[in-house]
Amino acid sequence: MTETGTTTTSSESSMNDENDLAVPGPRPLGGRTMGLLLVVLGGIGFGAAMWLAVEKYLAFIDPDRVASCTINLFVTCSAAMDSWQGALLGFPNPYLGLAAFPVVITTGVVLLVGARLPRWYWMSLLVGTVLGQALIFFLMWTSFYVIVALCPACMVVWTIMWPLLWYQVVRGAQSGDLPMSTGFRDALVGNRTIILVIGYVAAVAWLMLAVGGHLVASF
Image 1: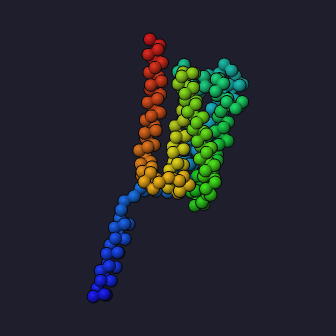
Image 2: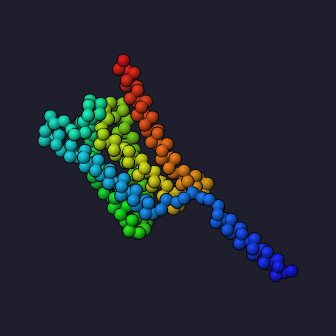
Image 3: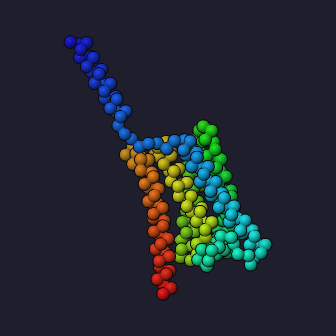
């Protein structure tokens, strides 16, 4: 009787363990995936920052030159580059990107070769990205309501900054670097793509409302 009971209990325990393993959970963001994201996003951001930096240099040489990223009076880089908001720290904003995006790219390469980075490094990178995103929000507001012009190269940087920030938050959540409840963490990690898309939809909606407001005011 004892052996039979023990065998039955062991079988039930094994079945419960198998069921626990079978419970679906949020698919984690892999280290190599994170590394690839950082390399790609950082590379795009660096390219756009370099584009703007070159345009700013050429404008110094020839103030009458029309920037290559100028399409019309509304879609132009010149308005942003010539404004005081285009040089908040006393030098052109693109130079910030030229300094920051190589750090992002290097971090991605380190992850792709299989290295692990300490928590302090990830948190420092996240803080820097948050500050960068705050600057982007300010520049977006300036473009929509003050300058009333869109800079194509700037918009490239705007586009990659959101996933650059968001996927760092996801990585920090699933690694435990960002403390939160298990339920909130699973919801955040499991719905990371949906939340990313919602962020883009909100940005486009903001742009359309701002542009629509200017169109209405012009009539």
